[in-house]
Image (spheres, rainbow, N blue to C red):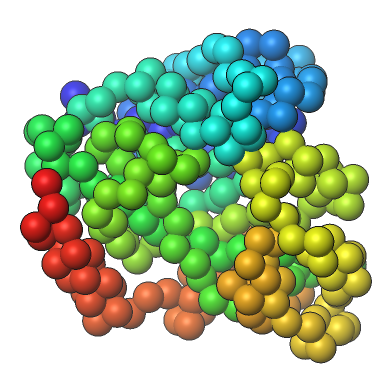
Length: 288
């Protein structure tokens, strides 16, 4: 026990796993890829997976760490977000309580997963009796908003995101509503940076499909590297949550990672990290 177990959801955007799997592979003890047994989205729509992907996966998995987990992840009586939460719960139960349960989406690319694991290991004592000491571990997204002709538009401030827990009592997607421990780690998140057709499909089939605001897609279509400074409020649910965008003149993921790693304004300072964690400790001090 006390292993580093990483779970991915395999769905219609499975090709992105070729970018999200490699950064975590070496530092993970086991990796689980979950997909619906009938290849359905959380909204019940069918998708297909090119057999070439599984050939790539077999060739990539040189240490035989990866396990495919197929199950019934679509219940028509549930909403998309309820199916989302249910699949993540089933996946983490499969991964095994007593280990670090890390869930990474296919469009999330760790910049330094080894550092994230090193940070996790500081809290291994929470794995001794996880049901009585529930926590969740946060890092920070750098959200890639849109690919342009020559580069990317990204949300100017990193946003917290939950990536790991010691006990999978998920309430909303991968959030458990337990005490959060923040770590200074950055993950590229493609989020809504797709082709227009792929984005429309995602908006219909992901866990947030009922929440997307009516102005989001038109703004996403209109904005580019020449006019982004003339717009504001870009988030797909509560627009003001993504207030401003910035531009970086490359679409190469490796170059974007290097840029993000070296840009100080994209990282939480030690004092801010301390006070966030102190606030969480104090908030949950008297809760059982």
